[in-house]
Amino acid sequence: MQCSECDRPAVIDQPYRGSHLCDRHFDRSVVERARREFHRQMPRFPGGTLAVALSGGKDSSAALVLTEAYFGRRPNVRIVAITVDEGIRGYRPGTLRAAEELTRRLSIEHRVVRAEHEIGTTTDRSARELPGTVPCSFCGVWRRTLLNRAARDLGADALVLGFNLDDLAQTILMNLVRGDLARLPRMAPHRIRQPGLVPRIVPLARVPEREVFLFARGRDLPFDHGECPYAGRASRNLFRETVFRLEEELPGTRQSLLRTHEQLVDRLLADHGAGAPTRCRACGEPASEELCRSCSYRSQVKSFPETA
Image (cartoon, rainbow, N blue to C red; front, top):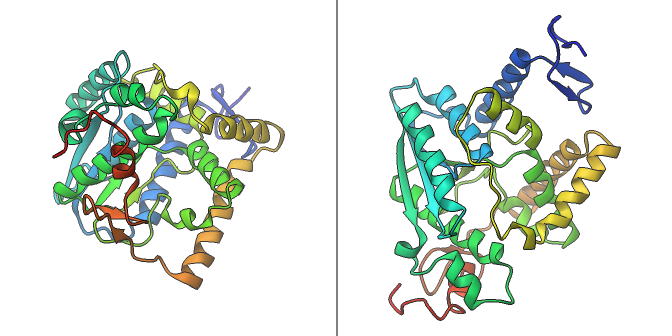
């Protein structure tokens, strides 16, 4: 199979685009798609601080490299990688090592936020105390809270996330199936700045997961290949499989879901506006209800110290 752009052998087939690309043109295509997303999501960025959520996996590692490539040469832009250590034994230590290696290679400031220090518990401990709850539920909530708080403390103008096209398509489908239209405008990337919330930027929004993996391997990026031990219990798995099967049968399904989301958000914002978030009565963080989800889960965990 030959590259659609030159006479070199192709390394990837892209049915949704009807093309085949060699390693060079594939790398360029990922960089260009990320560049367009940065330009679309952050028009006329004057400079400042960009926080990048770095888990040590392939997606966040690729997002950090692309952020550094696009903004790193600008003297008025500071890039800081943030890693949240949720306290998952046998998994997080390996990803932390990969994150530390990548930030050293790129000479990028790296901060590690430990859940046990910041909120008083770990995912492992909470999973034991909440046996009937899927750990991904509270772990994801606490991770998002800690990332936002750390980015805000840095004075970050935006928080770059490593969500890829598959991630976004799955989340969009989940919200549509659940009839949760109110959540759609709150998905990253954020168009409107909300008090207390650092806007999220998603440079890999139009890059499928498989292509992120090939990009990371092609760049020889250090990233951890392991899977979280709790991942098999996540409700997202059903939607992951559904999106995969739809894409196999109907190439371009993921892009169609993303376009549908963008059109719905346009209409929702035009008709109802963004809606200012309230403040959690317990912690003061932005919340969609009187008590934020972080504090709601926290109230169920016995090991939380009273003052945490």
